[in-house]
Amino acid sequence: MNALENKERMLDLLTMREIHGLSEEDQKELERLLQNFPEWQDDETLALTAAAITLTVVNTDEPMPANLRSKILADSERYFANEETSEETSEETSGKVLDFKSKSGRTVSAETGVVGGFADRLRRLSFWNLAGWVAAAAACVVLGFNLWTTNAPEVAVNPSPSPQISPALLPSPNLAQQREQFLTAAPDAVQSSWTDFNPKEPRNVKGDVVWSNSLQRGYIRFQNLPVNDKTRETYQLWIFDANQNAKTPVDGGVFDIDANGDVIVPIDAKIKVGKPTMFAVTAEKPGGVVVSELGKVMAVAKIET
Image (spheres, rainbow, N blue to C red):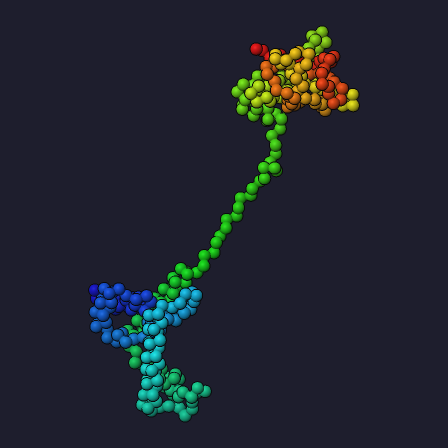
């Protein structure tokens, strides 16, 4: 390691010592390097720079370590004591001083225009002293910046939440979609097409019935079922059960036809159906009836057993 590298390593160790102390091994290395640079053994610039950086950037809520506080106080007392001695010596030995004083009472040098004691101190510093001080100050500034970024409070960045759509605002599946979902979910679903109840009086009603006995649910679908006058009649579905008297089929609910075209209606069985054999649609008085006379049957759909 050449002289320049020794110098840089020594400055690094001095900086580390002033900021957070050295290990026993590093301390021995520093002492060995200082023997080659005796002018740095009692130099206090690193300690003062480290203290200034610490006081300006480090979180003041945390107390300063006791060892660093003691060292700063001791170094500052020694520094100002040396300043007073240097100023007194400078005033005694200086031969060229102007006849005026500053407001603070300190004599101003005619050669440099700088306070006498401090100017003498600057003249005594060698090039390597100044270069080392600048390098040490730069190292402390970098260290202070790292300390500040480490201790700086983290700013929580909340990502913009993705918009949540309430289930209540989602469009409900229409009856055609519900029917398709029903056929997929009901493995025992049966299906039968509408036919005329009396071939001699064809009504040409098309469509079908789908029913699940396990779910007790189903749908009826129509084409060409005439629009009914609600003030005079309504349509009513009947479910004929093998386990029940044919004269009293199960009421499957009432419904109206408002427009021509495809119409799908959910089945609303009033009691449990045991074994359906046939579905029938009749025209009844408004509101429906309890027992139908089957006077006006619009269509029937038989279930094959």
